[in-house]
Amino acid sequence: MRTLRTAARVLRQLTHDRRTIAMIVLVPCVLLVLLRYLFDSSPATFDRVGLVMLGVFPLIIMFLITSVAMLRERTSGTLERLLTTPIGKLDILLGYGLAFALAAAVQAALVSLVAYLALGLDTAGSAALVVLLAIGNAVLGMALGLFFSAFARNEFQAVQFMPAVILPQALLCGLFVPRAAMVGWLHAISDVLPMSYSVEALTEVGTHTRATTLMWQDAGIILAVAVVALLAGAATLRRRTG
Amino acid sequence: MNVPTEPRAATAAIDEPAIELSDLVVERGGRRILHGLTARIPRGAVTGLLGPSGSGKTTLMRCVVGVQRIRSGSVRVLGAPAGSRALRSRVGYLTQAPSVYPDLTVRENVRYFASLYRRPADPDEVIATVGLDGNAGQLVRTLSGGQWARASLACALIGRPELLVLDEPTVGQDPVLRDELWQRFHALARAGTTLLVSSHVMDEAGRCDHLLLVREGRILAHDTPAAVRAAAGTDDLDEAFLRLIRRGEEVAS
Image (cartoon, rainbow over all chains, first blue to last red; front, side):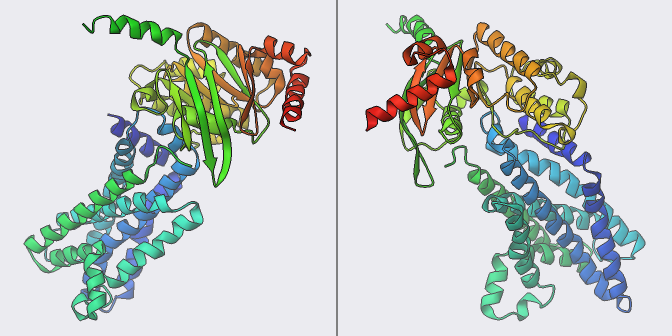
């Protein structure tokens, strides 16, 4: 119950901030349009890269938004106050998780709609699976954001966790260089980075008409990492501080 | 035969102080902030925590609500260790810097905090109590500093706590409102609530039932305002505080 109340409160905060809502929805759409015309001469490349971006954008945006939102909660004293009330730590994190997962679902659905209908994205597998994976990625980004915000003392640090945590994953996820072609140690690193599985899952949908076992496996890994990050995030919420 | 334990425990609860500090030591960043405080704060009264800025008032309050890591000693609140789960619905805390959500309205803030308790007070009633009934639908971000602080106070009152820990609740409030708030605090105390209220203005000290004067992490005096005045030999509490400090320093040297 307290989880739902907290989710409702976070969403209410979001609805008072129209500009953030506009950016959550519009920024990935605009970026996708850029990508579409960048690969104007090669629609097949757009089908591959654009599809992957449908998963990468929500991950990045949700990571940023949640890490800043959680940092605000910490620095404004509201977190300390919450921890003196009957609410549980997991209520707080799951409340955030639920609220931003909902926001992420709306974002993923809208961006996918634009990609398929306006930009002519073509995938072998179904669009519904793409949306599902995009939501999964958004949830992953959100969970990572909640966790890493614990290590930031201020906004400057929080914002820099984006290049520190997300960029290496983007570089090693197989988008720029196929993972199979990487030198051994890079390949090993990419094996433990969750975004590698996001990209692999989306690529599976792009190239197979039906959902593959590998795709479901990857989806499971994404979800598992998200759950672990959330639990680890709850462990970083300390009732007593120095 | 454990039958008699129940009533005995109940009587003990009435005599038991609301807050019991035993040799409480707190260190922050390698510096000792509280030097072994021992005190018993009675139930159903307003106890003023008075002392200059940096004397350890906020740290002491954080110990009472259970968010401060302590070095040694103990803090018991309403018969349980400070910060224990059972206490979280019985203790209300107002932080010094207002801790409410600036991007929510006053009513949305109070309703959210109300939703965390099993039997909360009526949000609109509490909003009226802190004099914000005219601003209930306003975003906290757009309030003045004093109103912002009162929105935060409303969120501390909403859970109908048995113990209210208020860190400088009247800072920046206009004199009429300050007077109303103090009347409200005493009304709560008469109804059985225990209040621990910090302040660094001595003219508020006279309004408390008991005073806990602290300086540099040590207790200078813990008594009623009248007894503090008598002990220092002056009617002016400001002067009394000063004399007590000097006396303490003479003893030390």
